[in-house]
Image (cartoon, rainbow, N blue to C red; front, top):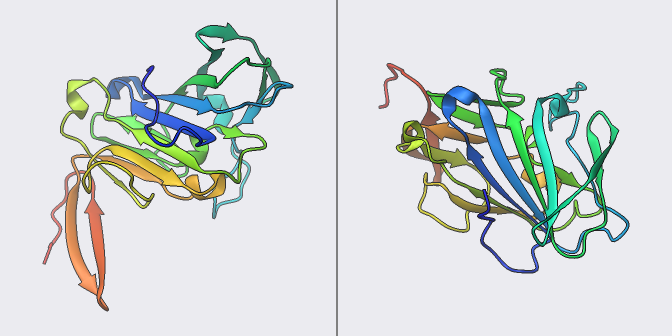
Length: 212
């Protein structure tokens, strides 16, 4: 998981998201923070998602979280159930997280051999003090043979890759980042135009839909 998101060197926050073996129901997430807080960077996972403001404990699904800078490990201190402070870093900060994903409600994240769904608030760490800056996300299919033929659907603005392919994406802020879910799998896409505007209907899983 050393590969980080491609993009401008001045991007303050960049992520790399990829599924582990589908049977593991775990995502691997790398977050790179340029010029972290010199007093120790605070990061957290939200306890809510846009449009559904019930309190949700996404942090309970964090299986592992590690921090490093220039190849050296950094200690983390948990401030509350969803917030951590990392010791001061001498350079860019790299956070590596493993997230358990077994929520079929479309409010969190899910991964199994049939596909995956991700709401960003359940996997992307919020970097305190950097929320209003540009966020980059590289999404890759992982190394498991079961994910080799998967496609990716998201409304995040694309930076690299062809439509429906894995690649790099961007958001102008953290709030925008977590407002664009991601769907992965053997997707069936129906393209159509309504009122002169191109649309796409994305179907996941087995179906007997009348595409016409």
